[in-house]
Image 1 (tube, each protein chain N blue to C red):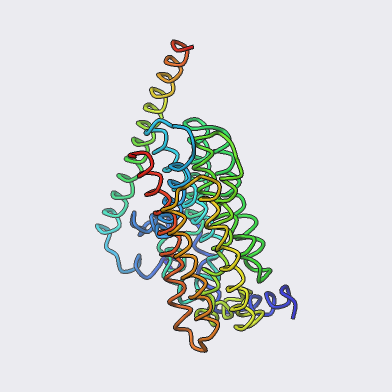
Image 2 (image 1 turned 45 degrees about the vertical axis):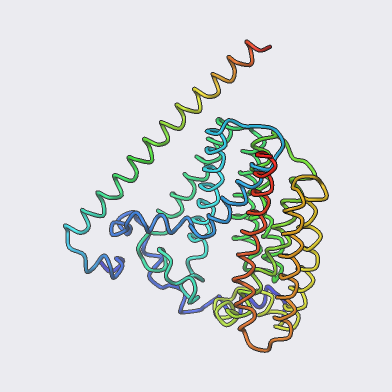
Length: 319
Length: 56
């Protein structure tokens, strides 16, 4: 079955696709919305990782930036990422209503009207790029705009529902923050910032496929052609292993390039080794237990990796 | 009312007004924060420009 056939067979004519949403367009539909419902549209948990990696890129970049402008740059990255998330929730409201993991989001719950979510996301996207351009520099603003547009148009609207490689290519959108942070300081893109980009780019597939492995029924019901749904569990586990192997040298590369010191290099080797081991555990485990553990570890991995990078640089600055 | 969510249907007018007020306050604070950010960015950049011209 081709990817396109898969999509049309599962999505079209599905009576479960949030029947009340199409009527809920006027802003009056959001009159029961609380401030926290709009905050939830920004995907705060995803935002925390974006902020952390964006700050890491900014912190380890050579050169200097005024602390206030650095804070504004991180704020713009956070708001831009959140805004893209809000537009994603607007577009995916039909499948979000089907999936157990996402049906509690503000739009499927009827807390926020779809039009309001779209307007909210659009205004914040434009605002974050504009402020980044005025306060920091045009390169950082341009990269932020590309990241938002890539996430909304390439990933959300095109790839997500059409190919099992959705999060491989779409993962590029989430890989931009450290590159944006780097550009905020240096005003450009260099090999070092491309390596930071590559790090998150290669981390994304095993991270999301670990989730997709134990949520594959959810994705199948919603008609999203995630790899475990389309290619099977065995193939997914093989791909996850390959990506963790590819990620291993890429994660150590900042040390080789002089972006970070030996403290980071050791942390990257240990964390990367554990990531490879966790993917082997997933491969050998017939149940979903290891996949759940690997998903949790993958989040810790990225936080710890960028944490080590920041710590290493901080120690270097003090010393 | 058919298009309203379950939460909205069970809310009193006071509750709706309370939530609306909270949203208004959040918007007002966001706009105020934006003004402060733009002002401070202007100050920092102008100061950097002056420092650069004096240094150069």
